[in-house]
Image 1 (cartoon, rainbow, N blue to C red):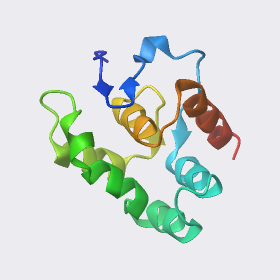
Image 2: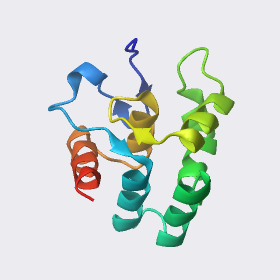
Image 3: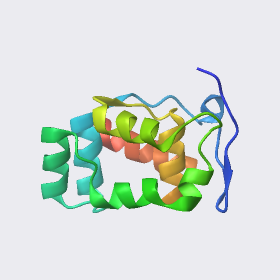
Amino acid sequence: MVEQEVTADFGPLPLASEIASPVPAISDRQFFHGLAKWEIIPMDEARAAVRTGNIPAALLAIIDDPAFRSMLPKGTDIEDVYLIVEGAVEYRRDNFISELVAGFLGWTAEETDEFWRFCAGL
């Protein structure tokens, strides 16, 4: 994986190599379950996302935000992001989409790691 520095209004995001400690990859079920448990999306949307690959409204709003789109790495089309999120069965903490979404949620690297560890335990 090629690391690329990404910056946004909320400051620079860490490169994958700068994440404080290793966090496990989590399944799609764990990811959407965690979003629901942390009250970012409703549980019915989490269930729908797991069943069909639908992107929950709160996550879609982030992806559709022009500021989010402007931060995509060169050569990454928004359709790539949709397909990655809709088709993922595993979510990796070191993926650039994970880092961008966490930044939009206002999470620090530590909070993002905490979320991943929380989800890994579900």
